[in-house]
Length: 327
Ligand code: GLN
Image 1 (tube, rainbow, N blue to C red):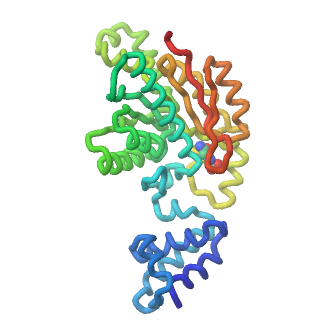
Image 2 (image 1 turned 180 degrees about the horizontal axis):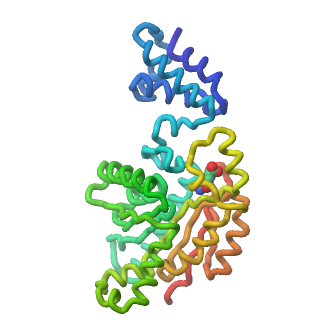
Image 3 (image 1 turned 180 degrees about the vertical axis):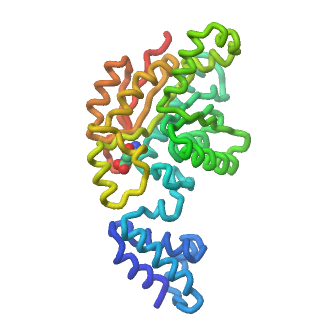
């Protein structure tokens, strides 16, 4: 028996025929403690049952977990996103390829904002440090990808779950260190963007707190962001139930968007409006069927220049708009 034969036999027992062989390969590579590329180079070599006894036993356990509906990313504790490997666990949503569209949209819009500032100020070459905040950051995949792709931008991120923030911080330290030394992402615990709003409110009402506050920080916090991104929970409640019935092990908190899936998006839009700089963009992911109602909500809240970005399967995945600019 060859490695290839073992893999194709195992793949036949797995769900989702499109990815079954890949899934089996990833799981066996983990059991053999080798890379997928190394395993693929051995496909036509003979499989030695004696020396690989323990690996085979471990492989059977992982195959069984996959058969019971757990995703390969959850089993391995890591997932590739925008060309980087992110650590994941039961506290976070596993990053989807669809969400790469959100990163692309943010990079595109941020590049445009930078260009506009440069044209206005006549500055050449240097970056103006676009300020991006990623709400509902989960594993940090969106925020960290943006920070790695544009090292001069100021990126912050938040999540309601402390456990998720811990995963995001670990991913951030590891990936930013590898790619862009000295760059940091600031992480905040926050229910959507409410931490930033209560900061504003409390400092507006309490005179003594106001006096204490450094004027510079205040200016920075007010209308703090040029771009707000979010992949909020947006799956309609009943659909989440169906996902759990078929073995989904991700946190309900990261998926369940209420009856029509729009609970968080409804709150996010007015919050973002308060925290974005003039001309600033709100960009977020949703299900394609929600895009029409989302566009109506954005328009009603005063957002302009609405755009929809398609995911790799050509579905409407990311919606965005910007506030009127100052001039
Ligand atoms: N796209 C994800 C799914 O359908 C949902 C992600 C989310 O709710 N933010 O599984």
